[in-house]
Amino acid sequence: MKTLNELKELQKKGKMQILTMNDILNLKGKEITTLYYGYRGQDGIDSFKVGEVISEYDNAARDTDITGFDNRAEYWGSFMTKEQLFEKKTTYMLFTAEGRNTYMKAYPFNDGWFSCSDSDRFVFFLINDGNETN
Image 1 (spheres, one colour):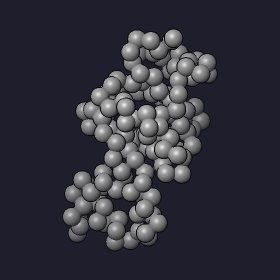
Image 2 (spheres, one colour):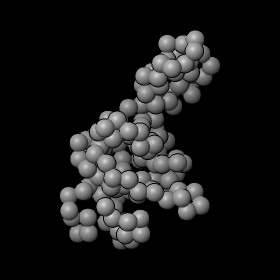
Image 3 (spheres, one colour):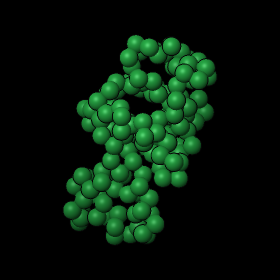
Image 4 (cartoon, rainbow, N blue to C red):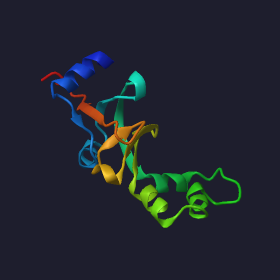
């Protein structure tokens, strides 16, 4: 795997692109390396095989460890506005093929561009096919 500085150089040279919902549909099952710029230099990289992409709401529906409700989505429905629930239903989370949450999300107001940590810190990616420097 390339280092953080190597990936930053590739991104500066235009050899990496922003990860979008359109891309992710074609990347399922493929190994990618991602780069994101965090707050105050807390930048990060990750390499993984792309798994599923699901809405925050659907992911919350899987969380049954909440007292008094069948799942977290039901709990959200008890206090969130329709607008808040709509945002949860249209914000998508990226998981690895092994099921690990990458904490990369595609927000509806960002045209389906994935970000990490904050909604304006976009994720760049390379397909790990041995041609990262071409």
